[in-house]
Amino acid sequence: KEQICRELGNKHGLSGSLGDQANILFARGDLDGAMTLHKQEQQICRELGNKHGLQRTLGNQAVILKARGDLDGAMTLHKQEEQICRELGSKDGLAISLVNQARVLAKTHELDAALSLAEESYNIAIRHGQTALAEQIKPILDRLRQIVGKG
Image (cartoon, rainbow, N blue to C red; front, side, top):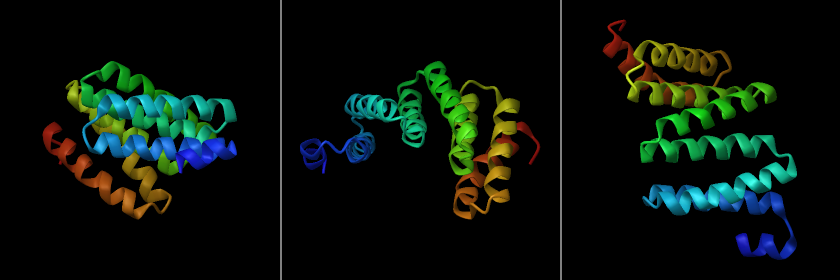
């Protein structure tokens, strides 16, 4: 797909292909390769003004940074992702960003802040009919409630 999109000059398709490949590399444990492709995807999304793609790739890069142990870098990218999601009115993207921020905060032992973001994330998903997403957020929320002692 990447090759065909490059031949056709289809930058939208190319950015999607790069993102998909990056996610596969991440799943295989190749964090450097995944980050390289996500950076290329980010550049194309910025060129095209594709904010939906941009928020998605920033979030994916943040997850890689968290996996590398760069929690400050991860939080910075998740905040950028959150801002774009709010601008776009992307409720599912916002819920995902917030729960991922909660997971970063839990790693830094900022448990009350983590719980607050996880609750906001879950409530957004429920309010907007994102049942499958809410079901993914619920165990994270429940675990944070248990740790904080509010469960």
